Length: 434
Image (cartoon, rainbow, N blue to C red; front, side, top):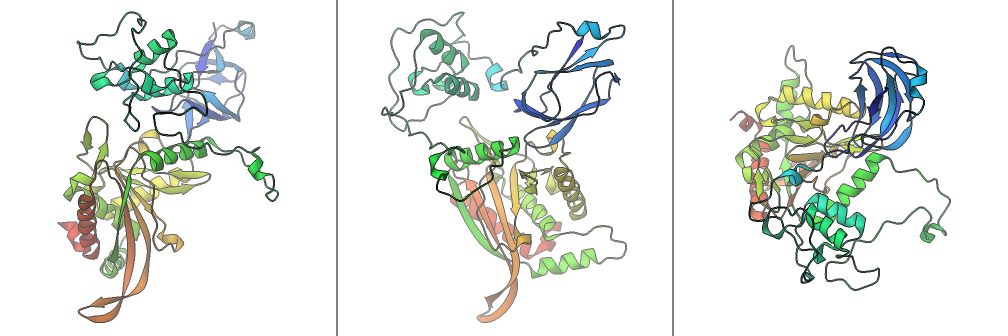
């Protein structure tokens, strides 16, 4: 029987991907470990290796196919002794669906065991008051959205009344919890306005245009940043940093005999941010409904512009690295990002993000938080500006920084304290040695 080659899940959140290229053609011998295809996810293009040996009997999904579901059959591999006749009537249905989020696998408290079958509700739950927060697991939210259910009308059996998958399944079986029809008043917050489509009449009177289809990356960026801007209460603080001492230290380091590195201003910023996060641990956090997570290391994500979007490779435990190591790692990750060769662990995670547009001459800007992180630092260009020192006017090289934090887990005074620490480090870079 031919062996099914399935669309792999290359990250915990991946549900579909694009089959970019086949490295083998039908009839080619395949050894375990051979690269057989390239899969394009929302973040990178990754190689897929064979785990079985045989002959590639049939390519089910041709290269260039977009939005292939995880665990869909993409090819059939003939085992030793099999020929093409074994492909006649071969099953090309998908494999087992990926497991749900780990959160759904957690056992519920003994006081509320899962029922064998969802009982019919004795009474409809009382509607939640306007603006009241609805606590539900990500899987429950997704199923409810797909089925057109109103989470506010479903009683939760999880911890603290949290709506979980079995509650939504019970509502579906009982035929309850349907969302109000379009136009009907709702007790919850109004839904966000949908983005226009290509055929929307609003574009009819506009100049001629070319419609460039959204890539998987662009769709993910749009979804995540819309959710971040809508759901996370952003709080911004800014500071101007004099960097003349930093520039002098950078020149000395890069000019040393035998130096095989070229440290950038951004490398100093990465190191300074990591040190400041260690000194101000209340900024190195993430918000959850259950608790604020305080991270013990600073894994700094660095925004890198790539063709068709943006990606944030991570410099792990940046506070423990020297400037030369940070410089080398940043260049390596940026190169891999632009080539689409980042491994999942190189861009998934991170506890804090830095976005630098200074090289484009941008003076200052505000960034949108990269969830589930609690903060992001926007770095502007260093430029000569007039400053007042000891009551006299002088000139200094000044760089503007803007910090955006999640106000649910980071208060204004905490954010200001972090910026004060960061300013002190960057204006006196020898303190990085302390």
